Length: 233
Length: 342
Image (cartoon, rainbow over all chains, first blue to last red; front, side):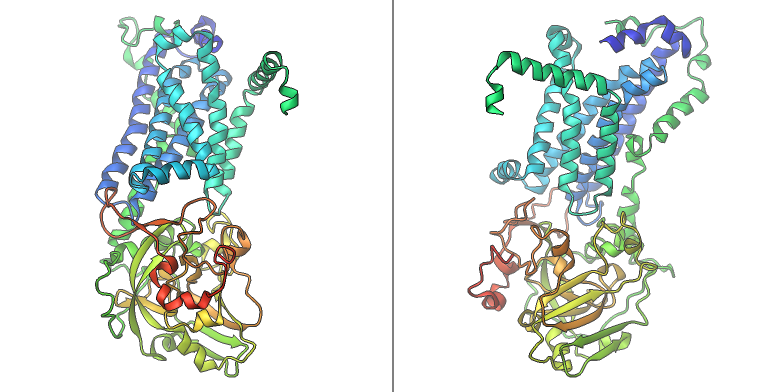
């Protein structure tokens, strides 16, 4: 919320281009995001349904949507540090759209696994989610993403007040879970997962103070509400 | 919300459109997103989809001199397994785990096209009386070639049905007269980083140790099912499938079936194989297909049989012990705990 206010701060806006230009910029940026995120998805599924995506279209769409969701997640996490650093406050207005595309890709990722890979063998699906640590944390990340997506509407945001920000701070945890999910899922060739892990950590490091404060508040709250916590640790 | 105070559709009579989003601003923004590189969703568009998909489909008809050449072989047909639905040739030669040419499935078909296999030398040596070296022509002329339609089960839980052409490893081993110390057979892939980009770059090659090494117990190697393959679908092997000669052990996971072999050694001790060294808790020396022993990160109880059909192909089938070849090979493991010796 504080960051959003700075967006509207006339002094900040004056340092970039004109005030009215901002609304246009946001509009076209959103158009661009829609095209860049949705068209590849259409293209891939068209090819996959017609068996034109190499020998194993199932594996292809799973990997495509998985890495696509991660790319978009990192991009959405880049926005607030970028906007601050380069005084481009208008960028903050596309975060929700990016976040919803993260969820869309993640949803397709899970659906691909269930529908095309396991072919609705539900018991196998639940077994795999419980048994395989990398799938378990992937699923936790997905459920959190789902919660963020369904609470993304402005009316809910207003209703939830402070709790909305609390809930949406989980995006940092999601990023960590997804990075570990990717790292654990590969057979060999750790270069790419390690690179993504480092990028995730860098983006979280940009908001070091906020995350530290979050961690402290969680610890303090636990201490005050459940004094026995020490024994259980 | 303060954001709302700026209406998107606010008329802007005082300012010309060009001043708001002129081309340079527009391009700069795109550039900005592009320069974020792999982070950008835009990068998704330019990823290798069409290239991958098309590369596979134009392979066969191309007359391009740069592409790897295969030639027809003379062999006796496999009439016993005609009922198996074969994986289309195009899929067999475009979906490969051959990390020497890149760790992604589509990469070998793209990066192996300039691979030189003639001249070739395959040495068979070690604990034997008559070590020999086969040259390129020997590979297809020394033994009568036969077609074998085998199921191939990858450890990653997908499978294919492939009409291989080759000869029994047993025939080759008999030629060198193994001695009584020959307990195991070790196989080695060519090590040539100049030709094999995956050996030259850890990133491309998936970070496994090279040269690739595999091994079999001598009785597994002598089993009539164990095939030295020099071709598939009636022709010599494409580079990406392990030209000019590879192993095929149909009751074991695919990674045992080592490609582009330059050395076969009869040895006393159990060889240290590539994947087992990398992750001993995930890949054992035996690597027999076993639906009851899961890979730590996925179930081995079932598999997706790659045939034709896109996303909607209903191709998940139960995995059989020893990949369905139990009748021929189960006796090799009598009394062994297959959960322990996976």
